[in-house]
Image (cartoon, rainbow, N blue to C red):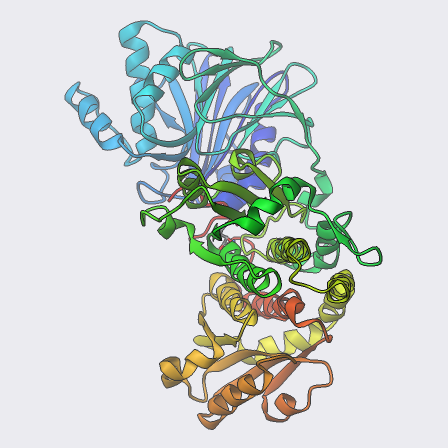
Length: 614
Ligand code: M6R
C-alpha cells in the first residue's frame, strides 16, 4: 500500500519520480505528492487523486532539482485529501519524508511532541515520524542519518521511508521494516529508490533489496552505505534484475487487466516450462525439492494467503488431498496470525502471494516460523519479502501483474500448486505412472486450451452486455470449481462494484436460494466430471425460481445447454485442471461488465494491488 519513489544523482529528478509514481500507482491512488531539492529550496507539491492531478497542479511551478522524493498514497490514517498527502514536512520545513506502512505507536509519540509545543498540520502517522526525526536532530545535534536511526528505534510498526533535508541536501536517507524498498544503483553514481523495481528497471538493472531494520545513506557519485538500526555497517548485496520494460507497458490493450488475461497462455507455460516433462514423466520444482520429503511426512500442510491467492490455495487443497493424500488446511493469513494457532515443527506452512509483500501473509509466516514450522513460499515478485524469509519456494514466473484485479497470477499459482501436488503424489506413490503422465500432458495442453477460450471473447462480451446492469450475482461451483466460483465473484465485485457471492453449489439451498428471482444472474461451473449431475440439479433449482443461468460447460454439453440462458463452452480437460480453464470466462465477463459500467478496471476504487498494511 502506497508507492514510494526517490532519486538522487545528476539528472533532473522530477520526470524520473513522476514516471515512477505512475508505475506504482497500482499500490494506491488516493493522492500523490513530490518534494524536490533545488538550489537551497525544498519544493513540495501534493494533490488528492491520481498522479495526473499532481502533474497538472505542479505544471506551472518550479520542478527543477537533482534530488527528490515522491509518493502515491493508499490512505490509512487521515482521509485522502491534499493535507494528508505525502511528502510531509517537519515543523521548520527543513525535512521532507515519504512513508509506506503504519507507525502503530504514533499516538503516544504525537502526545509527547504536542507536550513540547509542536502543532501538526495533518492527521497522519507519517508527519509525527517526521517531527520526531527533526526533534531528535535538533536536540542531539546529530546528522540526518543518525537522527533517522534514533527515531526508528522508538517506532513500533511498519515502514519504508525516504527522507531528504534542505540543510543536508547532498544525501537521501532511506529505511525499511516490513514494507518493501529497493535501491537501484545507476551507472553514473546516481541512485533510484522505489517500493518495487518497476520504476527502476528503465535506468539500471543493479539493485539492492533492503532488509528489515536497515538504513541506507545515498550520496550522488559515492558508494551506497548501509547500516543496521543498531548502527553496524553492512555490505549491500547487489542483484541483477530480470525484469523487462515491455512487461510494464499495456502493449496495445486498453487495460492492463485485459493484457494480463490474454497473457495467460504464455504465463502458464512460463510457469511449467523446465519444471516437467510429460513424455519422460517427471516434475521437478527445483526450489522446494529438498523439502518434498518433509511435506510428504508433515503432520499437515497449512496454506496461508489473502484474496485471490487464498482462492488458489483452496484449489491447492483439493489437489494435494486428492492426488497426494496429504492433509491440508487453508487459512486466511489475517485470521491465522491472531488465532493462536497450534503449530508444530512437523507442520509445513506454504504462503501464496502474488506480490510477496502482503502484510498479513508475511506476519502469519513469521508466526509459523517462530513456532518451528517449515515455511515455504509461492510468489510472483522475485526478491519480495515473502520469498526472502521463507526456507524455500517456487516462483510463479507470471511476469509483472499491474492490474489490481489478479488474473494471470491466479492461474500461475494454481499451476505451481498442481505441479507440487503431482510431484508429491509421485513421491508418495498415490498416483499411478500412467495417470501421472496423462495429467502432465493435459497440463502441457492447457495454454492452447486457454487460447481457445480467449477466442470466445466476442460471445463472452455479448453475455456481459446482458448482465451489465445487475445489482447482484451468484457464483456456484463444486469441488475444485468452488474456489473458481469464489474467484469469479471477487473479480466481478472488485472491478464492477456489483455485489456478488460465491457458494458451493449445494449450499445454495441453505440460504442464498431466497435471493433468486428473475433479476438474479447465477454463474455456474457445470463442466463434465464427478459432480456434474448434482450441479445440473442445482441449476434446475435456480431455473424453477426464474433465475438466469450462465453456465460454463464442457464442449459438446447437451444437458445444461438445454436449460441454461447462456453457456460458455470450455475444452474438455482432466477434472483436476478445470480451475485453470473455468476461471478464464469469468475474468473476461467481469472485465467487460466493468468496462460497460465505465468503471476504472485497472485501479478500482478503494483498492491497492499490494496490501502492506493489516
Ligand atoms: O499479493 P497477494 O497475492 O498476497 O495479494 C493478496 C490479495 O490482496 C490479492 O490476491 C487480491 O485479492 C487480488 N488483487 C484481487 O484481485
